Image 1 (cartoon, rainbow, N blue to C red):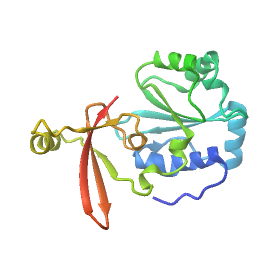
Image 2: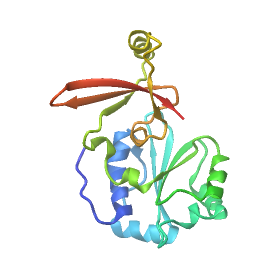
Image 3: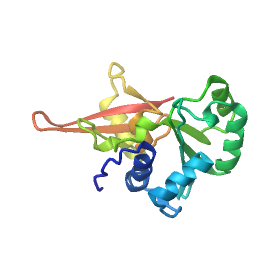
Length: 208
């Protein structure tokens, strides 16, 4: 994975990280053609968002949307419910997971509207989650989802058969799980490599 130089323009930096790091890391094939910084700026200015489309290994359609930020540090889509309804009709499609990257959290009444949508049809994350390549951050363990039922069974039977050994939890929307997505109830393997202590492995169970 290539190191991505900061540009000084947060939305453009996020766009580059999404295309060059996040989507490859998640094994999402990019469908949308790459655009120049000038075209990106123009689209962001007039549409107030930029849409990147892709498809993952499970053949699920993925929409990733970078929202603009106004002088108040927010934008109309996360401020006014009617604008969010318009935005939702524009970017959310059937059988598609939509990841929205926003400068701030939605207003309470806007979040109420979002909560009424189909589960996981649209998830909103802050700019900060995509300003850097999180899995490559210092002191960040490697996160891996346990997808093999036999491996999961072995972990439970060997490491957690004693009821006193409780599995630690990790939230479904933990920053690391944005990059390594999993479902509630799945196990996550955390591998940490240290020059002093060597390799250590821990497990977490995903919760809401």
